[in-house]
Image (tube, rainbow, N blue to C red; front, side, top):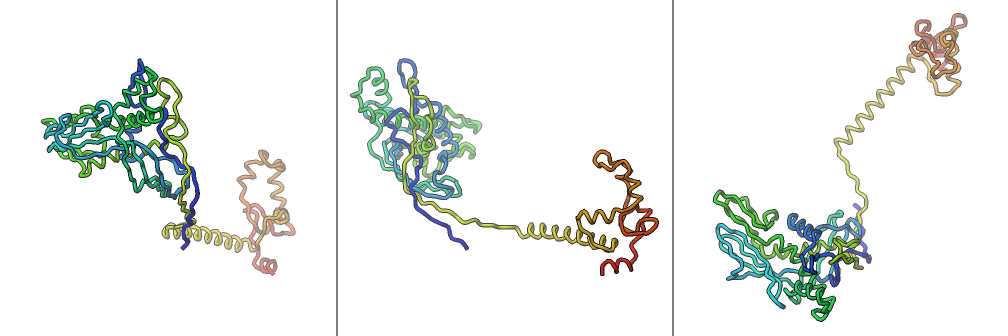
Length: 395
């Protein structure tokens, strides 16, 4: 059994960029108003919501490899909460979510109440460090060992600061890179939150009414249990993972921007390439076969070959002599006045060959009127080769 070959090489792999410039995540309206996530970003967030997985990107290191990724990006920290007046749940409204921007430097939050017992949680947005392992197995992407370290909270004033920055060009609000980083993280969280914000209510007929929220198309809730919505036991972690997967999905956009820049300006791709140490595994070719199919094919081949051999033996027995494909063989076996008469007018072949020639039945035997010899002749004018002559010819 051959062992796999494992090597370590430096490779260029996609990674989420620094987000400290315009990467096409948000769009603006009239009077430089911030409209929120671009359509392209909303599609990314919705795909992640409905598939519960990262949007995969192509491997840079082959079908089977592993490499680490470290980068800065936005992440939610979801913790249990109580007495949230902005959202409540009850036996009829079993999911309720809203985003709370707050004021000034207060953090961006996603407030959620769910279940008949009004379970509440508060998801705060942080500028965070991502550490994880990217694993490709048979060219399928897998994400393992995700570790997120929270740093400073993203302030709610990021959106307001944009309008002030554009309107007054007051660059003292934030240093430019920090301002762009906060704004992009703020917008990315808005795309994720925007799919959850709203309410999910049960009707008297045990139907469901979704007011804005799209949580019903995800695996975050099970609505098949009549009038009771079922949520995962680790619901807080699942919402955090939703934000993580959406951020990781930006890795696949390294060659072109996902949307034109704000105000029609030029934007850059949200991902870029970074050099990392990758462990690359290659496997020697392995061949397998199905025994049943193997024997079917070889049995059919053996049967056909045996049949051809039997036909050949029979023809040799009837003809009394073997032959070959040489011109001499054709010459000595077609000397026959009857065939000469039959072929008159067809000497050039091709379209000149008459139907009489095509339909004539010939056989190998004794031909000729006088001085009979072995050759091909018309079937009704040809006699079998005498056994004595066959023995002489074979000797």
